[in-house]
Length: 443
Image (cartoon, rainbow, N blue to C red; front, side):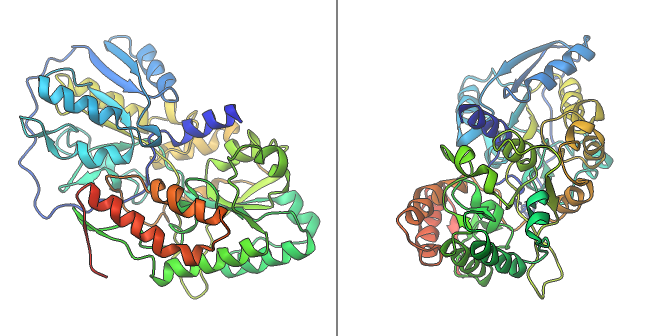
């Protein structure tokens, strides 16, 4: 489980509601004015341990670029290390790294003017740094966490679109068809509980389970309607329908309140997971690495839809970003590095998780390492889901996992239902939002 925890942290490093959208302000800031440039000067790069090999690969293949590589936590698990250090550098007037890997949450402060110079830490990449054609090549909506004030302040490294995972070998043995709607999923879950007790169609016990289920249901739990105005409405029908569905499956013991990544679950219940609504990295990191399900059994299906709705939607559970510092004295080298890290087939075809850049994602899918484990071709499913992530679950200055972990999960452990816990979850979100300066929109 220690290895599993490390793997999970690696996948989620830099993830805080990573597919979220941040509304652009009505007016754009004045044109970006770089500091005096010194082409050929050394650039300092901060990366997490998972992305470190990619940065080292770039350095090896670009020996003329002088680099000082620093490993840090990558803003994983809500860390504020980067923000704290940048605030220090703002006060002293030096020390800023040229390139950093971080989370979408970092963009919420890095895109705003800070320090005595009133300059945002992140450089607006769409202002003569990265061609529009390149920025347009990312999956639909995937750069929205990077956007503020009408500009793009980061490039998306990877995404974790939610799909329906299932054990094809077990489904075939039991004679079940893969559901395509949430209603079919609910019915099949209840059938599984009766015919094959002990087998599961999902879990809501992890710190990111709300992103797989409530985000996929287009629940307005974290919906920015203005740069500093947040709508939180867990009484919305899109929220209550998912809570009701899950409550039924929890009562039937087809969905567990124990987390897939909780202590002991892989050994005790990993082999009885029939289906799992979860991110694209579940295939390798959950079923393969954690549950040890043999190759050729696990498959992925398209995100579930609600009957009567033609527009599909799904959630996102992970994905980090790369930012270039506005203080960099070598923007050319810094931007070239970030572009290579996020868009090159050379790097992304071998990346641990699904690239946000569409052409690189195709190279990733073509890599035998990323497809030979599965029972069926995951390519079409992954590509379709990448464009279906709902952008109404917004990128905020606080993690969407805190209230879920501190309020909802303990309530479920006590035997309470999701439906009766929604008001407490809403209150916790609102309190946290207000504590970081958000105004709460009226319903």
